Length: 118
Image (cartoon, rainbow, N blue to C red; front, side, top):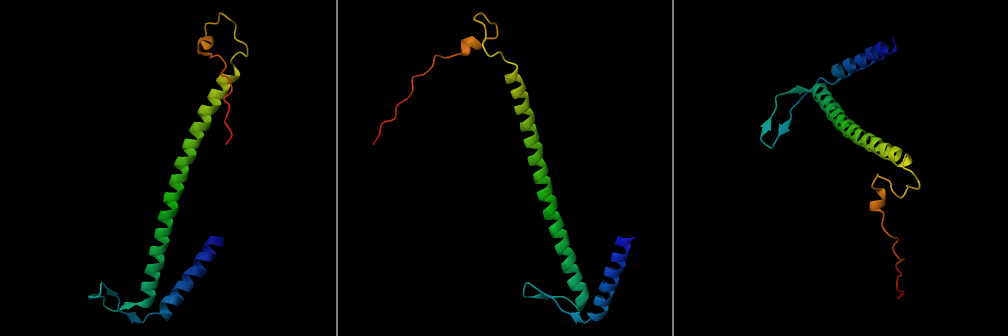
């Protein structure tokens, strides 16, 4: 009921605005073309609606971009959780004859690298 009442009030305000601003105006484009007399209220309302449309389109594009980013982040989180689950199930101390192939990938420890001072 409240949205209907707000709509009625806004509609009445627009009607009063249109009645009060019905003087014709001429619009010029590109220094040569001029329009016929158009009511001032129509010019202002069209400008407002074009602004609403542009703001809505901009908001929609931002929303879609953020949704795509969220989808990519969710995919990354799922991959990282799967990797974490795999790493949690690995044995801490693999046996010498394990068939997992982890021992073949192990490298001897590297000596620490010393940095020279200036």
